[in-house]
Length: 167
Picture 1 (cartoon, helix red, strand yellow):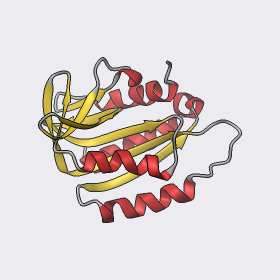
Picture 2 (tube, helix red, strand yellow):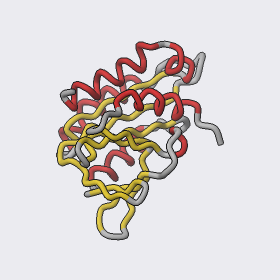
Picture 3 (tube, helix red, strand yellow):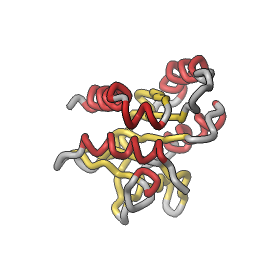
Picture 4 (cartoon, helix red, strand yellow):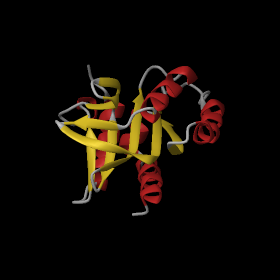
């Protein structure tokens, strides 16, 4: 199954890679492994689409929804990640920072109005208050074409991540 938004975001995130910054991508994002997040030994709570490790610690987690953008689905992944202590990608264990930036992305279908904006603004304000480990929560949205061909979409995502990581 093709995931065009996942691939577009994966390509954007690769720009951040340096010797100190590792971008972990699942297969849908163009990587070659899953990133599993764990709450305890042998208790995998979720798979995430992408994560960014700085000096061996996960600081940013990205989840991309191409179909299910209901608030309950959006909150489910962020809650599972917040309850986790580490992740495994390619057999390597990474601890999760106690100050995470969680980025939720969802696909907008051409011709549909941007109806999720109010819900996402609410979640953006309330999630960091409700979940201590999530220092910042943000959402980005657009069509695949916008992420592939409108540089401002990718630049906005990269700017927000760079600001959080202070790079």
